[in-house]
Length: 145
Image (tube, rainbow, N blue to C red; front, side, top):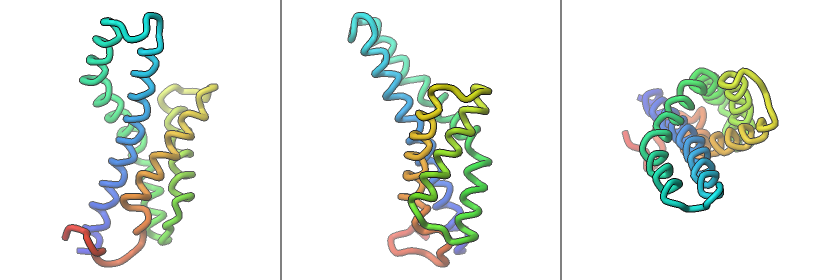
């Protein structure tokens, strides 16, 4: 029973991390479109509507696919060693972000800092949901059974 609760908590935390990455990238894409030539025009509004419907789902799927295995390894390590530090999860997220950039774009570029920062935020998202409880046995107060 305990491992099932911990597993569900870890999955929720990982999905929150992936959603954090998706939200940051999406907001930056919309901001980029709005700051382009013409600002908020009918074309940029149309592009924004398109972005609202399709790319967030694509970004989320790519993020989940690329980060799944490295995140599972970090989660396993944190559960095994009982590591609950937000810095551990933030730094691990930053490292996974850098690794993800290398996998998706097959290179490290001038935008590596962006992937480190977004990965750090994703790691903090994981920590808020699950990481601060890593390695604990039993249900926590307020946790669904």
